[in-house]
Image (cartoon, rainbow, N blue to C red; front, side):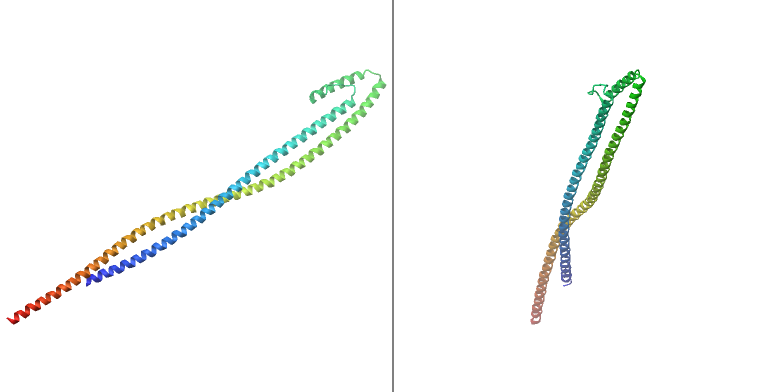
Length: 275
């Protein structure tokens, strides 16, 4: 009976262990399901962040290209305006000098610097020739040249004023464009910083996703191990149960044997008394 009690107690303990392990397995399965959901959620968020980062970088690239195009266009306009101003000034200078010295003829198809040098030489030669004329003629010509020089000074002052005004307008336009470009560059830098922050957060989330995947793998391995242990426990439980049944059967056979022995002894005693 003591052996039967011990086996019964072991069977009870085994059942309690099985129940405990079964509950632990259920808890692990629940946690595994939670990890799986968290992992899927994190993967979805990572995909969304990748999409947002890609769109932000694409918008940033488009904006940079647009700014580069606008800068080149503004530089081209400024260069053309400067070239146009220089050309107009040279043409006005040519026309004025030709009106001032109508007897001087120089090929106007030449380069401006070459034309101006030749024109000055011709004008000086004409002035030297005029110096041989009578004093009255010289005085009259000097007065005429003085008036012409005054007109030339006025003309150049007008040219300088017009040029300065145009340059001021160009400078103002350039400053406005630079201010606008500066604001756009600041906006781009802010967008770039936001993209960097998103990238850092994405890297952290990717690391978390890796950890979740590792935990999920460990849980799967633990689940397989628990399943194997549960099978072993069931085998052990069946073995204990078989041993208990076998012990009970042996006990019954022993009781039967004891009862038969007592009956045999009683029969022997009766026969002895009769003799």
